[in-house]
Amino acid sequence: MIKTLKKLSQSQWLALTFLTCVTLLSGCATLGFKQPEPVTVGQVIQMSKEGVPPEAIVKKMRDSETVYRFTAAQLAELHDLGVTDQVLDHMQQTYIEAERRDQSRDDRGAWNMWRAGFW
Image 1 (cartoon, rainbow, N blue to C red):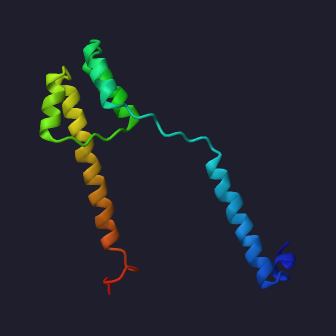
Image 2 (image 1 turned 30 degrees about the vertical axis):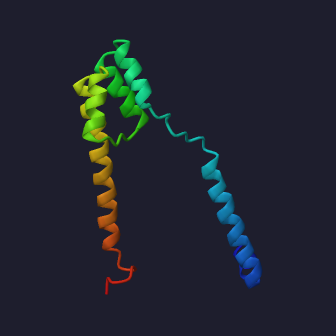
C-alpha cells in the first residue's frame, strides 16, 4: 500500500486527499446531531399562564439551550404577563452566560500567534 502511495503523481495525491477529506467530513453530517428546538417567549408565557411550575419551565429552557436577550422594559412586561421571577432570572442568566462565552472566545482569539499584531 505504501509503495502504491509513493507512485502517485501530485495531482493524483491531491485528488486522493480531497476525496478522503470529503468522505470524512460527510460522515459528520450524517451522525444525526440535532439542535434542540428553542423555547419561544410565547411558549414561556403560555406555560406560565397554564400554571406550569417555574422549575419545569426553566428545565425546558435549559434543555433547549435558548438564549434570551431582553431589555429591562421587556422583562418587566413579561413579569406583568405572569412569568415568575425564577423564570425571568434564568432568561437573563442565559444572556449573561452567552456574552461571557463570546468574550472568552474573543479573548482567546486575541492571543493567537498567527494573527496580525501578535509579533
